[in-house]
Length: 120
Image (cartoon, rainbow, N blue to C red; front, top):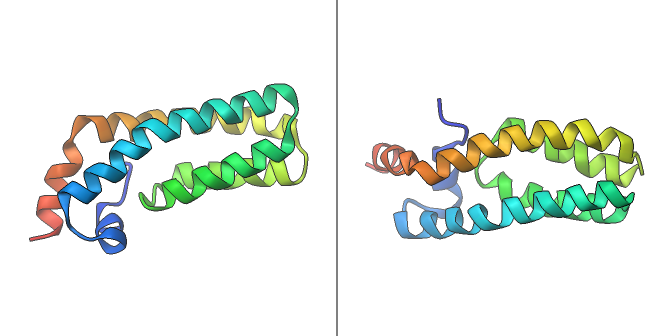
């Protein structure tokens, strides 16, 4: 089962494989970067950066409608907003697992087959 919702991506940005590839290329770079920033924010007790970076990541992942990852990022954002850094540690670990599945799927190129099936 796909960890992302291809139909939602097509609804958001259209069926152009080139445009979807640009989105995916962007996510392949920014998701790991934002994850690293969140990790540093947790390690340093920086709730503001935790909240802001989680919010940014939430926006990026919303195109994929990857519900498990989105729920975790929302919880990370809320932990930052509430200055509950300790609560963010297990959330980040769970998010890393979700993100790894998503990024592996995006790198695999399997999404291209799904787009061809959804945009016909």
